[in-house]
Amino acid sequence: MTPDHPHTPDPFAKRILERIKGERLVPRPRWEFVFKNYFFWTLGAIAVILGAIAFSAALFQVENAGWRLSVVTHESFLSFVLDTAPFLWACALILFILIGYVNVRRTNHGYRYPLLLIALGAVLTSVTLGTAFYATGFGGEIEEALGGHLPFYRPILVEERSWWVAPEKGLLGGRVLSVTPGVASFMLQDFDGRTWEVDGSDLRGPDLTIVARGGEVRVVGVPATTTAAVFHACFVFPWQTYGLVENGPLPVPLAFFSTTSERIATTTRSELCRGIRPYQELRTLDENGI
Amino acid sequence: MTDEEIVRRTLADKDAFALLIERYEAKLARYLERLGVSVREDREDVLQNAFIKAYRNMNSFDPTLAFSSWMYRIVHNEAMSFFRKKRIRPQVILDDEGGAIIAELEDEQADTAALAELRLSHDELVKALAVLAPQYRDVLTLRFFEDRSYAEMSDILEVPVGTVSTLLHRAKRALRDAFPKPFSS
Image (cartoon, rainbow over all chains, first blue to last red):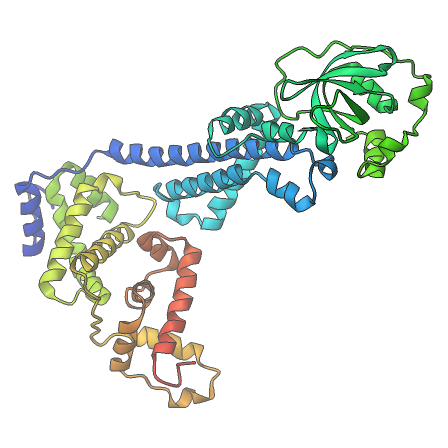
């Protein structure tokens, strides 16, 4: 078809050309398609990033669930898992990966990638990015900030703190306010704001160091009523939060011990403490650290 | 002149589009018939809409895939939307076709003792195709009647090549089951 030899279209082609001309149809501009393609890639990428954030929050929840002390906080391992499994974040991760898949599928060549390849790519990217987010403290921020605003959800740190304000079960968590010389006793403000006098006469080596260091601690002791004046401590564990950017300064040490101190060297505790559940396991944790 | 060259010319001069229409109208009309658009007027309408759509979306044509695959995809999608809109079941019409698909099925049955007795009639093939699920009929049509490669089928149906292969395998099994003995398992 050249200007010198004009092509005469067949009737069907002619009809289509007439319709194109009659309705003044023109090809849609290229930028629309380019934009659409980038748009779906971007949505796919955003979904994967959101998936990574969900994964980092899930990682934060799992890391801070207090696995080692679940023997004292829960009746069974199953109830512990049900209380701490990151269902919300796992659902969010799956949802965002699905959204990512749907969007990548709608890009120009998206249909060529098998579901498994896209899903695996999205999962691996989310996991890698999510781990990096967790390491920078972002996962914890999300878990605490976003989780705190959902009516049906309690962030893991809030949940875990609630397990440790249970003196009737022999569990007390909070901040050490002051320590008497030799840690014969110390004052502790629990997570509900109540101040306790804690009898530290049964505490041994590692416990003393933790109390003396100050800050937040978990105390396992002899079950007491909420109105009791004194809480008898048997073991003290540090309250560690993993994957959270620390805002405040480290606590000022409240006391110092000599490593040759008799109480550091002695491991035997009174009958009161030997009766608590599960004594041997707690002793091992106490000696080896959690 | 290649299809891609005509596409480029069409973007500058709409009359050049006539060359593409003439090049593909007969092939695509036959494809529509095989997909089950049995009434001639319907076929013309679907085809016309498909060409208009192709013209409107000419800038989205990706030269990394064959123009024919792109055009088949548009026609396929138009046919599916036609069936949905009209709420009708595709009606299978085959002229003297179906030799390739029967040969394929016969090859796969080569180890059966009943092979000697095996002769499928054209009517039996039409009946068997008519009861197949649409996605099975689509892959069989593209593979055995349109002679499309797996990669082309992947571009037309917008599914991964692996999915094409799986669909084709299942479609052949479903077709065998839909045939009278000795094909049916």
